[in-house]
Figure (tube, rainbow, N blue to C red):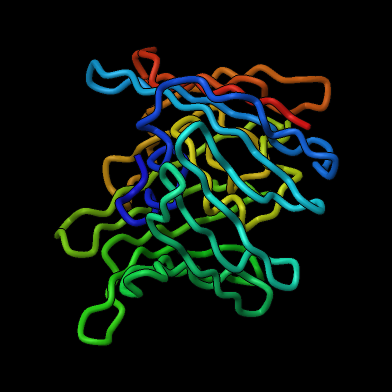
Length: 259
């Protein structure tokens, strides 16, 4: 699952509490082709089942909002890039996040209500290198969780996750991919940072087929962790993704509709 600050930004924590189906009101005359129109996900953890559905609305070719019957994320733009997201529950503003860029790359997403929580991104030649969840303490940004990425062919080949305040809490994960398109292939990169699913990582170009754990960060022997079963449409975009544990227990199912 996502860490605590990043989870505030993603659908899975914003909309997860609503298990009812929402009306399909995402149609827009300016919806770009092959962008997500509607998605749903059901997760299964420790005997509990949680489901949500989210509709995507577009305006002037840009993603304008993500919503269901009670929750909504409004998205604002400046110079063609996301500048702010506002999160509402029953039309009451809950919080908002400011987006800052450096060298044409997303640099920070900061909680603009309290201004002491942010996600920091670093890059090597415009390829993401790290992602850090930070809090402000005595005017100094301190990292609680740090992810380090190795990308190959625009997919995360390896991710190293560290909880900086806990000794010996660095974990290494490896991935394999298919050759077909990620559900957000035709959507802006920064949109991928405000949307997350248990069954799919939108950072990648393609779709995960296997994920592996390692006994420690120095190990080179992968241990199968998850497998994925994926169905596609004629555009090679996923219409359904099922995530299973290594013992074939179903963890999550997501479905996608496109413009």
